[in-house]
Amino acid sequence: MSDQPKQLLHMVFGGHVKDPRGVEFDDLSALDIVGIYPNKAEALNAWRNKSQANVDDAHMKYVLVHMHKLLDDPEHEK
Image 1 (tube, rainbow, N blue to C red):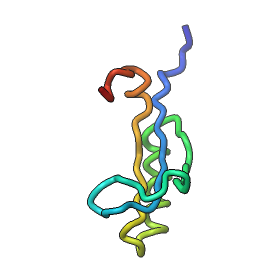
Image 2: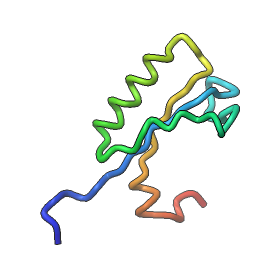
Image 3: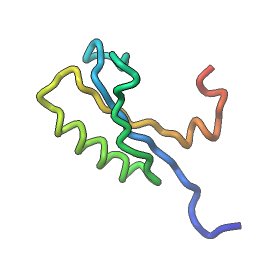
């Protein structure tokens, strides 16, 4: 067993959404995959930077996904 804490992977991505109140993206092939991060703090920092850089476009949205939850429970989506 490793002495390191469990990885809690988070992914940040974004793109142009059809409606600023939702997360339905206009063009999935144009998503901006910012990155995958080892913890929430780093992911939140990346999300904040990207979101603030695009603050003038109400239809540009970035999201933070808790990948570790999906990896722990792949049935979560169903």
